[in-house]
Length: 211
Image (cartoon, rainbow, N blue to C red; front, side, top):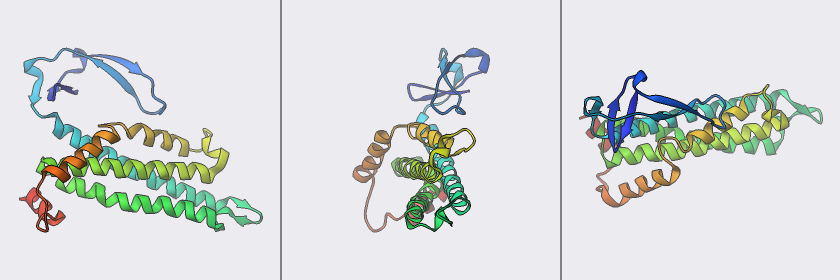
């Protein structure tokens, strides 16, 4: 297990820790409190920030896929469900709901891809990219999941339909690997500390990461 202790990364065997189950409103997300004793021989790295950055990008990628799945389910249901003799997807109100959610996902997806491309940099710019990706992706995914629940109506909150589970997962991951406030602070740091100007483009940052 990889564990954090005062910003250091420790690799600890499973039998060296005590796990206590913690309840989550996402029924398919297993959470545990970890009790353990750090030691010099378990320390494998001195910078937990790299691990957090990777976790943020992975969580962002997960919720982007989750959000797209919610939209796909909403579209399929809107085509199949009929009201007043027509599919509910033919009504403008439903079209606008789904289109708004899809636009949010489409705008968030390249933000996540940019964060993944800059991951090798390991500096304030890449950390800001990861934080921005997490912010954009979780907001878009939560909107998509809420939209899917609304399109499905009351059925969207039943065990027979998965969309409410996706909504719970999106909300749970919103605070994983850092809160929205922490992510915003990281983006602000990038704006105030890192170099700026016409030469500081995404292409130049990616070239530096590949370099």
